[in-house]
Image (cartoon, rainbow, N blue to C red; front, side):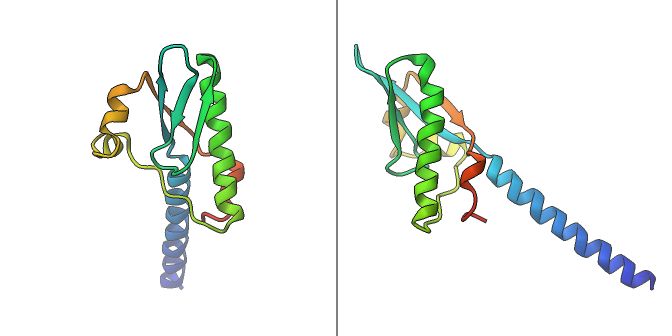
Length: 123
């Protein structure tokens, strides 16, 4: 009987660990590079979200616009039954030669959390 209880505890431990690992993945933010040229709007690009971009006329609007467009992009990925790429670490993106120039020209680098409503097809 003691062995059965220990096996059950071990199985539950694995389940809890799997849930914690999944939640940690979902909590990892997406990196956003913010650019501004002269009198133009702020432009935002998302290295881990191909095709996702946004603009904002005011710096104070950058965060809200970035979160909104990321949510819409993730929703579209879900609707099309496509798996969204997992967000990379900032250091990995910064060391990616495809993004070196964008980092050098960025006026701001922000992290945007994955919206909770957009996780349905990504489990």
